[in-house]
Image 1 (cartoon, helix red, strand yellow):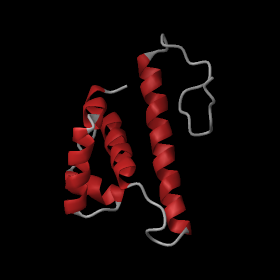
Image 2 (spheres, helix red, strand yellow):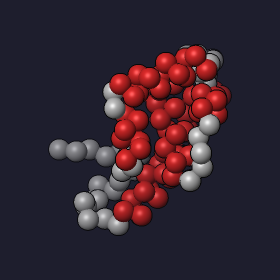
Image 3 (tube, helix red, strand yellow):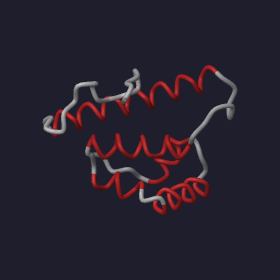
Amino acid sequence: MHQTSSLDYRPAAATPSADPAQERARARAWAERLYAERRRRDDLFPQGLFGEPAWDLLLAMFVARERGQPMILCRAYKAAGVSDTTGRRLLDRLAEEKLLDFLARGL
């Protein structure tokens, strides 16, 4: 049984035949909200206490793609709060896991 949470971007009754444009718009709004909430969390707690830079990197890249904006790597690394070296290492790992392929294909 699938449980939904406030972090789910799809309504519980979503069907595979949903309009792709609406589905993409919902996914983008969800990703933007999730990224903003993560930044608010970072403002409330000591630096470095929480963090998942690979997830932040994927969120930032997804939102940029959905907005039709190019994602310059140094901007992506900044969005994830990591150095260029760490960011490159994360991108390599995401590519190994085929997660960047998913991002390129879309929903």
